[in-house]
Amino acid sequence: MMETAMTQTASQIWVNGQDELLGVATLAALLQEKAVDTGKRGIAVAVNGAIVPRAAWAQTSFLGADALIKCRTRDLRSPLG
Image (cartoon, rainbow, N blue to C red; front, side):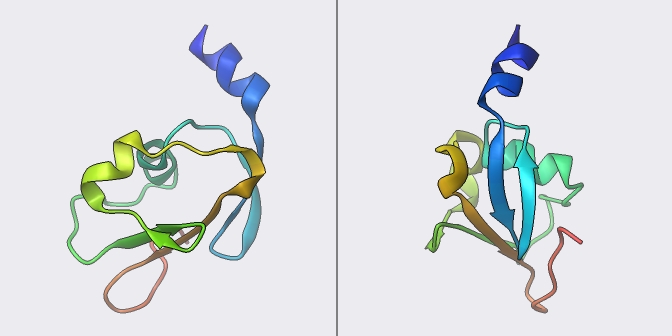
């Protein structure tokens, strides 16, 4: 049932300069899908220009195509690839 709901709500988002199909419901799920080591210190994530605190990643959901995600580590590399 959950897979059906996610499929029906899938939309395009912009992740570190790449247009992608959104197939997850939360920021934490997106980072997991991208194999980001979320236990690592120094990761910063912004959605639509606002920094999202690590404690809020699991509760941060996307509102369709308005999501512009930037993810950087301390050394300014993208852990999203």
